[in-house]
Length: 433
Image (cartoon, rainbow, N blue to C red; front, top):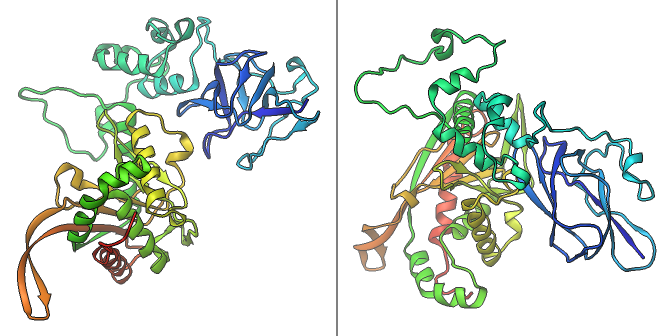
């Protein structure tokens, strides 16, 4: 009987290990392809790992709460084929630290599982511990928080809910005794003093908002931003979408929005101006051959996340629609995987979804440009006809492009933006689905 070696998958560029939270399947259980077999946690996200093969779980090599390096064999699955060991076809793994041989019992592995239990003997996942560290929550304080996870485990949601009700005095008491409070002057540095007079509500930034704030300040510090604008006639696209949206949904089971149409135009313009698809490393410009489009999406909390459409240049409008809907839907329910928010080479953000006609977005580092899409509005516009100019009601929209002036000058930035608009205006209203 063939045996498949299930390995701890790579969950992101900087993640080298993960903690086993729960084995969804037990030894002897039948497993289908893509059926969840294990739940793991990293310092960024908690994830469910599906089985890449069908078969029977024959051996579990690590226990719940063990911390395992990526690339390590964690279980064996009998697939029912001729007797052999099937190597996992995963090329993402850069390093494999002391992998377990299929013939070895778990106790013989050279990998030493790292316990994530504290002195109180209560388990905390790396993600929970990382959030607690960011928020200045001590182990003794975490021990007092009720957990809704398996066997009373404290989950990310438990901790975030606790933070919303945590009082300011508790935050001060949670500061480790060995770290003295910093003087106010050193904390605010060059920031202007904030008046506390009047009726004021104090709102502490959550962890994601702090990360976003740091990233935005860093981007403005690193890149000299320049923003260009262009107005686009979207009439043909609006009419085409209105005409085909019911049939499109019936045929493909997908609601077609404007976003995949925007991405398609951006991809075509990037092919014409490939230097826009770059990043900067010191004095080196790295032009990316893969076109991976990030699309900023709002979370229920109000924070933003940027799922990435990998190799968008290899997708047609149908493929883009399915991918956009899938990523956007899972972003709203916090179901994105770490690799799905990494590797972007160019980003778009739809400020029009909030009714804004234009915006000046901040570059998503280390990229060199980001495009904002404004609201589509009906307005009078001048049309050139064979009989002369006329004024007509058209669906108009502003595009704006913020770009890194270290490597993207006005000619490149402006030409790329205009070319994107040209592709949108040249949309074939008679194209079929």
